[in-house]
Amino acid sequence: MSWGTELWDQFDNLEKHTQWGIDILEKYIKFVKERTEIELSYAKQLRNLSKKYQPKKNSKEEEEYRYTACRAFLSTLNEMNDYAGQHEVVSENLASQILAGLARYVQELKQERKSHFHDGRKAQQHIETCWKQLESSKRRFERDCKEADRAQQYFEKMDADINVTKADVEKARQQAQIRHQMAEDSKADYSSNLQKFNHEQRDYYHTHIPNIFQKIQEMEEQRIVRLGESMKTYAEVDRQVIPIIGKCLDGIVKAAEGIDGKTDSQLVIEAYKSGFEPPGDIEFEDYTQPMKRTVSENSLSNSRADSKAEPKFGGKPKGKLWPFIKKNKLMSLLTSPHQPPPPPPASASPSAVPNGPQSPKQQKEPLSHRFNEFMTSKPKIHCFRSLKRGGAAPEDFSNLPPEQRRKKLQQKVDELNKEMQKEMDQREAITKMKDVYLKNPQMGDPASLDHKLTEVIQNIDKLRLEAQKFEAWLAEVEGRLPARGEQRRQSGLYDAQPAPAVNNCAQARESPDGSYTEEQSQESEVKVLATDFDDEFDDEEPLPAIGTCKALYTFDGQNEGTISVTEGETLYVIEEDKGDGWTRIRRNEDEEGYVPTSYVEVYLDKNAKDS
Image (cartoon, rainbow, N blue to C red; front, side, top):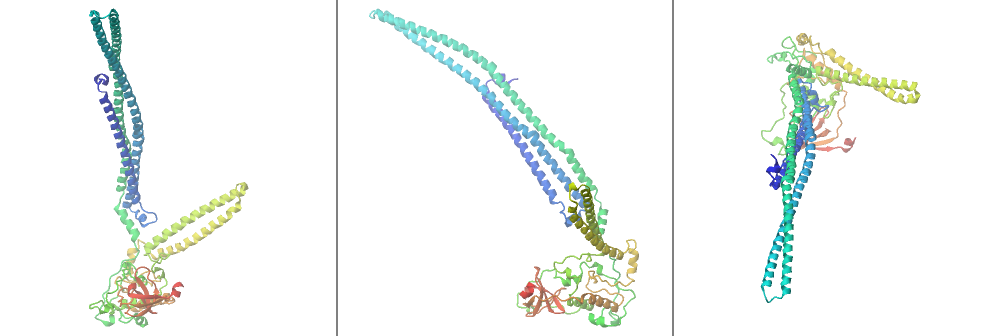
């Protein structure tokens, strides 16, 4: 089955078919190229996705990845990154093994096709030229034969006419002979051209065209085979990465199997355990007996002046409730309220509005109210100055519960030890280099290393002192914390023993309802309060005033840390609005707090502000 014999007269159709075959090949090349672009885009999106959910360095997210579930998720992200790499490999292999080869082959195929059809057109032109020559000789032979017949008839007519001279007859006879000779020559030429055309035609249809069509057929079959091989390669490229993709998926499964709820639960205990003991039972307070009330109706100062302790109802001391406080309420007295300030009232004074909010002047619990008044009137607390707006946490982590403080201090000690070890290694390296310079002066000047060595030694001494400081704090915390095996035993003794006075002012003393938890007697409790706060905080100077302000509206300070003002009242400004909508003001030496900035008109003293 050959195109040369079966399709000898389908030159134009074969030309169209081969062009269609090249178009199919180019379409497949375009398909593979778009597939490579999709693979690259998909790999890029996968990498971006993996990068997006990677934990940020030195952030809270990095600490969360100590849990097994988060570590499994991190492993999934890493495996997805490798998975994206396999899609990049697919794209690269498709481009190198298919696109590059097919692009070159298409160009070669176009040149070969052009050469074959050029030869076919050349053969067609040659046979058409032979045909034209044959037709030309045929028409000339026909014309000469007709001319010879007319010349012969004219001669016969002249020869039969008796009136024509002999010379005219002879001339007609010669003319007829010439025309006959020309006809014979034309006949011979026509016969020769006919034989030549027949020969060329046989060669054209039985030799040249079959050979050309056979080459075109081989070219087309090779194109089809090459397209099939490219499709096999296309599948093999994907098949090659399947094992690695399977390993990525196996890694994700293995990471998922490593998730352990018990381990994560233990990590939660280690992360949030405070080290405090659970509070004891709350004792019954008998308000039917005025002399046995656990809370005096007098102010804190009167209670402190009272030298006799009133007996409590019951024999056991009240348990502490302050471990459950989320944030020290003493801190809230020195910082602006957490909620946003209220908008200014529509009327000139909110007191004119019926059913408006009233200032809470009544005492719900006298001792806690007096205690809050005491703390509000003496905001000169030294160790809480760092807890004002924008302040940093204390260096010894005293603001944390004991267990968390111990962990932070241990972490800090470990970091300092690592830094110290690095400096010691650097000192050892510099010392060795100096010895080498001393033995071989041509390698360098030993004196050039003295400055660096001194600097490293100073850094070591500095880090050692810093580590000793944190180790001392750590030893103090570990000495205060009960052993884990003895916690249950000590918890039974906790309620029976009076709580020691807490000198560290960063630890809370209040119960969740805001009242101070009592110990063995009112007298000892008041003495502890008076001694602690008087000894530690009385030597502090009040904040200087930086200006004055006039109250535009009446404000009832119902929240802790706020102060009530009356419309038209003039007060001192001791701290500007930091952007949260609250301004800190003072009425006298004992009364200060926060009011909404929109409720007052501030007049700052320029000299005080600049200083």
